[in-house]
Length: 229
Ligand SMILES: Nc1ncnc2c1ncn2[C@@H]1O[C@H](COP(=O)(O)OP(=O)(O)OP(=O)(O)O)[C@@H](O)[C@H]1O
Ligand SMILES: [Mg+2]
Image 1 (cartoon, protein in one colour):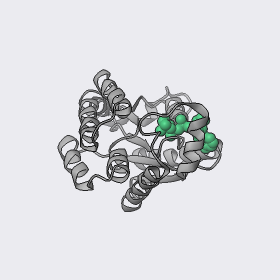
Image 2 (tube, protein in one colour; image 1 turned 180 degrees about the horizontal axis):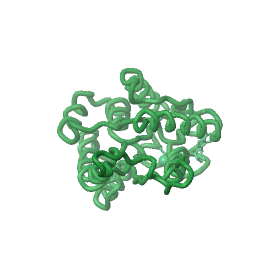
Image 3 (cartoon, protein in one colour; image 1 turned 120 degrees about the vertical axis):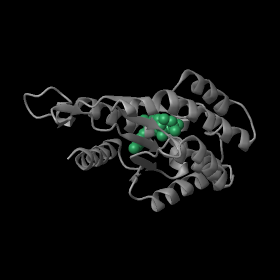
Image 4 (cartoon, protein in one colour; image 1 turned 90 degrees about the vertical axis):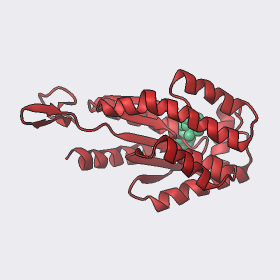
């Protein structure tokens, strides 16, 4: 994407009064039920952006720091109350935001994150049926000022996702949940996408991997034009 003769990435920097001004780092998240195809598509986007000279951090939630990864193991592996689970997810998120996401964005780096707070609404409010107000209160505490710039929701029926995962690995505490649970998670994701259309791009995750890859690449090109002209 760089014009010929320029080093990669230079096309994204802006000059003002002779000084290069870094364009702001962008925060892109991938959402969807377990097995929807998030990690597959994230890998493609990561490569495409790196090829375009964009300096980025790829990370995931829960997790992304040593402490948050330890919390992830607990969250995915230990039976616990829905309130405990939600609080641990936000504890991991606070650590991740403070030590990885915010510093990267402040340096003008892009952050590609496999799940973020939309997943907490979908899983803990949708799936576990906690009140959305509880999640909103924690969101207002932990990141009142920050939302993803762009969120891809890879949407698939729970039965399709379950079939994909069964073929590749043993289920964790969430993946072992019922189709009813994932039907509620999916519905909450779709509801959020509908109420925040400026941020969400919903993709039909039942399509072929290559077709989804093309759709996401096109959306990222559009976003780049919007953000950097
Ligand atoms: N569009 C697709 N069509 C068919 N199979 C797919 C598609 N996308 C991904 N898969 C396959 O489905 C499985 C799950 O994909 P992937 O790991 O990307 O999902 P995920 O959403 O990241 O899951 P998790 O939430 O559990 O991390 C993988 O074996 C992957 O190759
Ligand atoms: Mg994944």
